[in-house]
Length: 206
Image (cartoon, rainbow, N blue to C red; front, side, top):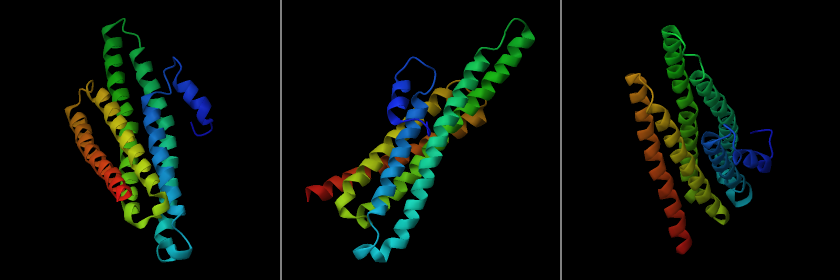
């Protein structure tokens, strides 16, 4: 994704190809939210914002890092999905083949749940940064804080679905329970993101 144009990547997303898919789309949503957080923090430096410039530069630096992490996770998600497909394609002619295939599938499913979980963690941090910009960010771009939060919320919802589709087939109860706990954490971040949007809207309505 990182080296593609937005147009070409979206065209590929719309094609009948295994990847990119919903996992990559979730990562792009997170990256969008991170970029908007970075933009708002950049507009809150210098002049009358000098008293908070150091904080805003730190937000900008972290948002840039989060954007790069999200883009890397899009590639990781595609690789994990390919591994699942390869595992399901293993031979099952003998009992040994079948056992090896089952083991490979479970390993691949566990691996496939990790990129969306990480996307969710990235999106959660984006929500946290956006929260701090509602009151402290440049009010001329406060609507962009809301869009950042909305993008992060969409990334979180997408990450949850992508985790859950893998959890449904994971046999290891400990791993599955850990992923369900992650889903619970991400759900809380969605509510926080929605609260940010509502606070911005209330402020705009006066």
